[in-house]
Amino acid sequence: AQSVTQLDSHVSVSEGTPVLLRCNYSSSYSPSLFWYVQHPNKGLQLLLKYTSAATLVKGINGFEAEFKKSETSFHLTKPSAHMSDAAEYFCVVRAAGGTSYGKLTFGQGTILTVHP
Amino acid sequence: NAGVMQNPRHLVRRRGQEARLRCSPMKGHSHVYWYRQLPEEGLKFMVYLQKENIIDESGMPKERFSAEFPKEGPSILRIQQVVRGDSAAYFCASSLDPGSYEQYFGPGTRLTVT
Image (cartoon, rainbow over all chains, first blue to last red; front, side, top):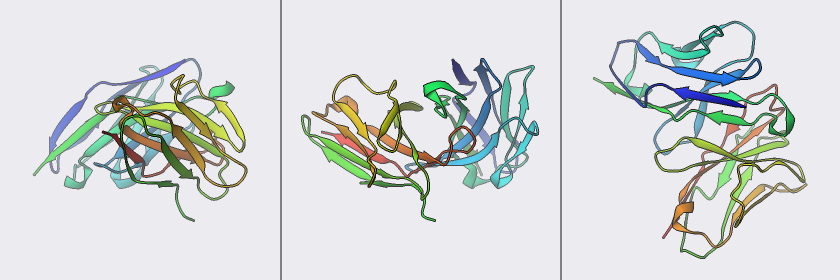
């Protein structure tokens, strides 16, 4: 079984300040992990993915995430927030085998608010 | 290469009617997933299909919901006798090989049951 826990339901930052969205995962095998972003009333866009290569993963729009096995974490960061970053962010783990092959399990989501 | 397409984007149904949601995967993708996003909740897996086969339907409600992905044409998620609790956003995702490649999501169908 696998699960993800996003530690904050809401995060509020000022424009130009760093962003940290926290995610912990649980998986019985080496996981594949993703961050998706959803803007209001829109679909989901992949920000970045970890699939057992480099532990520091760079994504689009200046976001990056670090896979830390010892902490079972996959936190999302960005050095400087932009107003357009305001959205909901989902940490996701992917099943590796069996009939659930490829199935994604989503965290509850973190709503990021960016103040001018 | 067009992305994943879903239609309709918005669907309003009265209680007791049927809802049909369509999903056309990206070209060359034969793996389709349906997810549901209830208000104030994250996305929950519903069903995983390959062409003409249901692989995993462990997330589907036991009654009134069905899904198919025929040899030709889009994948269909069908909800019979809709109730207010079915109001949600339904997302379809497709993948070339879900174990190795990411899933690409459609824009979703927002179902409102009145």
